[in-house]
Image 1: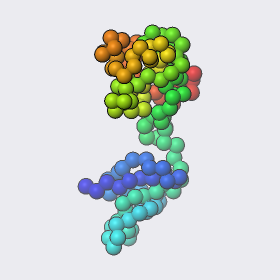
Image 2 (image 1 turned 90 degrees about the vertical axis):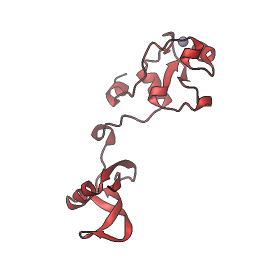
Image 3 (image 1 turned 135 degrees about the horizontal axis):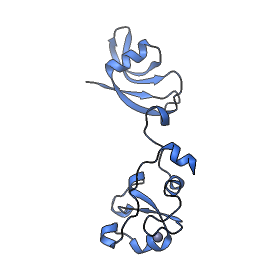
Amino acid sequence: MTAVLVLNADLGPLHRVTLRHAVRMLLREVAVVHESEPDRLIGVYPMPKVVRLVSYVVTRWRFGNGPAWSRAGVHARDGRRCGYCGKDATTIDHILPRSRGGRNTWKNTVAACTVCNQRKGDRTPAEAGMVLRVQPSVPTWHALTQR
Ligand SMILES: [Zn+2]
């Protein structure tokens, strides 16, 4: 099954759909072919590799991917409280340290105070003997905009 990449109207990649689904989008005129396989047709359309939505969709509601990671977002999600001791957080801690491949993702980051962050250093919480008060998760837009 060929997967077709769907781009938003602003060319931001959204997700992949099956070829059948992509063709239905073309038929309904919600999308146009953005990039196609050379010399191949499906019905009247060039065989799509990438389709582009005709009108912009606000993806955060529609596809439920959640907001993009940001430091400010982590602080908002955690209520600006340190994930380890509950005091005022001023930094971001990577649960799996960045030096060991930890990424900037919602689940790998918590708000932290400088004391805990320095204490933890290049270790995981388990290695450092530190306990997370919260289970980091992907916040909803609602949660981010409420605070
Ligand atoms: Zn702390």
